[in-house]
Image 1 (cartoon, rainbow, N blue to C red):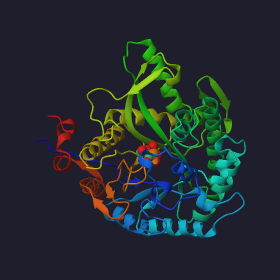
Image 2 (tube, rainbow, N blue to C red; image 1 turned 120 degrees about the horizontal axis):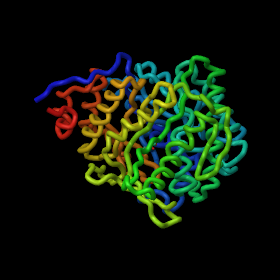
Image 3 (spheres, rainbow, N blue to C red; image 1 turned 30 degrees about the vertical axis):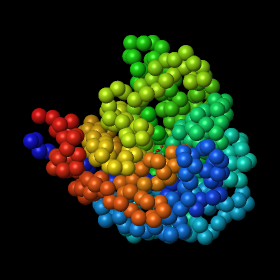
Image 4 (cartoon, helix red, strand yellow; image 1 turned 90 degrees about the vertical axis):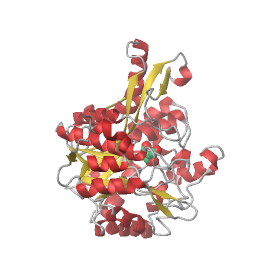
Length: 442
Ligand code: BGC
């Protein structure tokens, strides 16, 4: 059997990522609290509830102990805007101080904090005024950003302005699965433009307060290929999907224009507003043309023959990850993998998914792509948005009722990778033997 070790550069960041609404619990002042209260919006009527009990029960402490003890050196978490600013005219200093305690607790555990300022949730006051469709949304967000960065700057210098603006916009304003549940491309376009403006403002504000900060956003990249490469119709459908998901937002950081399905707005101030490219990658889909305007003339599905995750949400296509990293090099800034993972309660697919995706990062590094770190989604099972608790993305499992944690085998696999700053054939043989021949062909 071949033996090999794929070594990562010294100082490589190894961590996990989470988001406030998904882990904190007790978030009842944001748009997702309304959404969870609305019948039919969340599978099985599930609620975030206590989530992982990070807020009231302070269980972030035990989870960060777990992260640190298993070799991680960083963690990406998000701040809940509705806690910091519960009403348009009010800051909650206690909540802000608690966030200070949390990020200080991370640095005490030698987990470098990466802080996301917006991860899908909006305060109710903001949402009810019209949310990101409002002209002054970027300005309102900018005030919040200023407040948080001033408060946390002692401990935090890596910031993600907005998580997956494309998923936020397309799910909330085209597909309707996220609040406000609209199906309105015009509104989606306006939201995209505002999110780009907000990102650009936040970038400048953060640098004004903290010149040495590193600021980016987290982009959800979907690998999208035409189902039949010979078909011009499939190619056109795939191009439209690719551009709506992958290009509309980040393209504006290159040329100052947001383009969505024939519409265009100019945001010249966004050009060059990132110090790193935050890349979230999960899967690849194929796109076929269909004669149905309601489906935007396309049907998306997983490539045949690839392994699909237990709830049918993702397919294990590591080559799509390589494609994503290569694509991200066009921004000419270092790349951080801000999310990558799979939902898998029984931890059958996760070990293979993990080693095969980490292997792609190593390949990319060997081609001199400037990848600086990898954040696995997620540290512990958490509330999966409209899919509720039906999906389990954690290295650690969670029983939300008892709050007990379950050590899945992937915990030890990821710990070995983080500690050795490498992926070895011995690790793959032990934890993911199915992937051995793929990673170490003879
Ligand atoms: C989001 C996470 C989510 C994950 C898995 C990403 O798009 O940023 O919040 O939990 O996907 O669904």
